[in-house]
View (cartoon, rainbow, N blue to C red):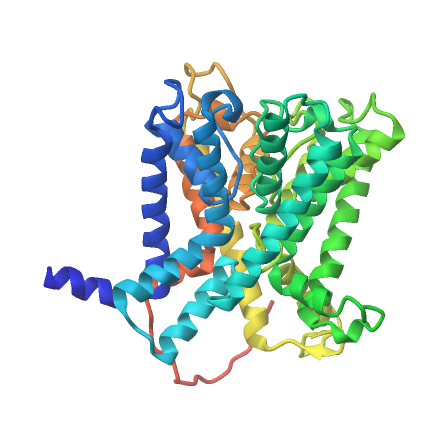
Length: 459
C-alpha cells in the first residue's frame, strides 16, 4: 500500500490523464455491454470499440447505434460523447486534486498546460463557461432541428431525441448518428446541413475563439481587437472550408464515379460544403463514402483536411489549425530568408514554431506506423483473400482514427480485432495528444540549462 501511494503521488498530470482515460473507457465498456444498454449482438469487444470511439469523440463504429443500442444505451453513448468532448479533463483534474492533494503553483501550472494540450483549455470557472456555451449552443440547435430539420419524424419524443443526440454529437465533433446511413437522407435539407455544420464549426474553433468573438461582438469591425490566436483560427478555418468545398466540387466533377453526379447544383454545393466541414474531425456524411463513390484525388484532399483538424481548445482532433498556420508562416519566412517567423505583424516565439514542427512530425510518423501495422498480413475479419483494401483506404481510415474524425470508407467494420485495436490506440492517442502522451511516457524532467556550440548543417 505504501508503494502504491508513493507511485500515485509521483504521477505527473499527463500520466494521470492517460490513466484516467483508460479507467473511464473500462468502466464505460462494462456499462455499454450490459443488457440494459445493448442487445445480444454487442459483446465486450464491440462495446470497447464503441466506448473508445465515443470518449475520443471520433465516431468510428462497428455497430448500428440505432438498432444495437437500447434507449438507455443511446443516452449513455451521448453522455460518453460529452465526457470525451468536454468533461474528461475536468474529471481528471478533480480526481488528481482529490487523490494527490497537491496545490502548489507548479502543479497548478502543469494542470493548465495539460488541459490546453488536451483541448479543454482551463479549470474551475473557465470550465463552467465552456459548459454554459455548450449547453446554449446545443439547446438552440436542438430546437431548430426539432422544428424544421427532422420534421419528417412524426413521433415528438423520437424527433426530440434525434435532434438532441445529433446536436451533442455535432458540437463535440463526434460524428455518431442514430441511423445506419448517417445523414444521407437529409443531404438536401438546408436546416440539417446548416445546423449540424454550424455546430461542428463552433465546437471545433475552441472556447477561446468563441469567447473572444462574443466579447468583441459589437466591435468586430476593428479586427485588431481580436487576439492573434482568434484571427489565425478564424481565417485558417474559413480558408480550409472553402478550399475543401471547392476542391471536392472540382475533383468529383472530373471523377469517373462522381460523388455528386446526379445532384442539382444547389445540392452539389450543400454536399461539398458539408463534407468539407465534417472532414474537420466531425465524421458525419451526407453521401456514401467509398473508393467507388469518391475519386482518389477527393480522398487525398479529405485526408489532408482530417490531418489538420480543428483548433486548440475545441472538441476536435488533428494537429490543429494554429499548428498548420504556424508551419505555413515558418515556411514563408524560410523562403524569404527571414530569421524570424512573423504573423500579422506579430513575431512567433521559436518555442511555438518548434512545438508546431514537433506536433506535425510526431503525428505524421504515428499515422505511418498505424498504416504499417494495418498492412501486416490479412487484417480483415473474413477469410484470407476475401477482401482486399487498397493502401489509400487504409491510410484514410488511419488518419480518420488519429484525427478523431470518424469518416469511414467501409474499412472499420471489416477489420479483424487486430486492425480494430490499431484504430482504438490511434483514436486514444489522437484525442489525448501526441505530445502529452510522450510527456506521460518520459515523465517530468528538469529543464536542460546547458548550452552547446553552434554548427552549420546543410539542408
